[in-house]
Image 1 (tube, rainbow, N blue to C red):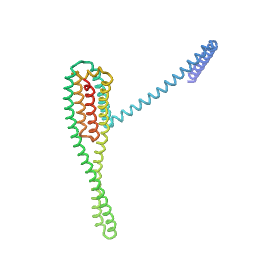
Image 2: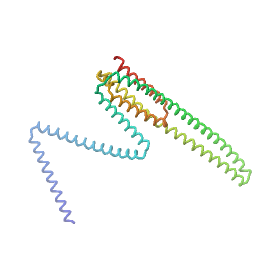
Image 3: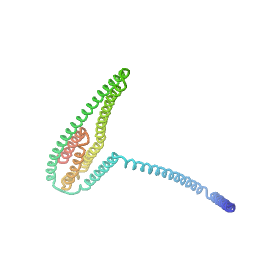
Image 4: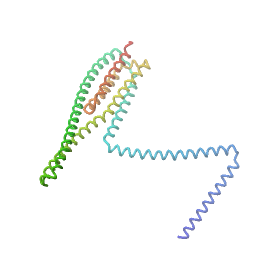
Length: 304
């Protein structure tokens, strides 16, 4: 073992000597170089050191991002709400792709008069659908109002029960010095019944609060979808206004089909959300979208 250690020390010493010789040779070579070349070499050396440090920093950032991504993946797997948010983001991405496809299809020719008739008919259908959505919105608002009233009733019941419980407890404490243990146990059992009623009331109140919070938490997701719909309308409006050639696009048959499919998909999403969220703001957005949609048609065909 001693000999093996000695051999390793000799090898290390030889390597150190070789490194020292190489370092000296490099220094001699640098000293023999032209000053301009030597300066350029030093600059390149410094730049290489900066790149190396930057690479190490980027590697550390990459490791941190990878770790955060793993944490997010774990949190996402354990959170249904986050999974739902990711699903909505994917739906928004799909809408963006469909918008791009719509723009890419704006090259076919057709008869403007035929398209105008079809779009006017489509407007009538859309107005009818919007009226139905408004009715659904009012129905949901009534249900939410009823839920709030029930929550208020439970809260009042809880306050009354709590007051009765405190009064009952004071009476029991007063009787404690006057009656025997058996009577005290009977009265305390009645007090426990009041506690059970209080607990049941609190549970019902918490359930209603949870349902209300769940409905309110889903409202921002729907608002984002409505904003996406508005962005699509703004995008088409800007495209028609900036390029006169695009005004002819409204006459193509494929555009009619695409608009109808897009409308059906968005309408279906609104119906799916109708049983979950408060549609008070959605109703205002829907009316604004209908107004903008009509404005697009007036702008596209008003000057024909």
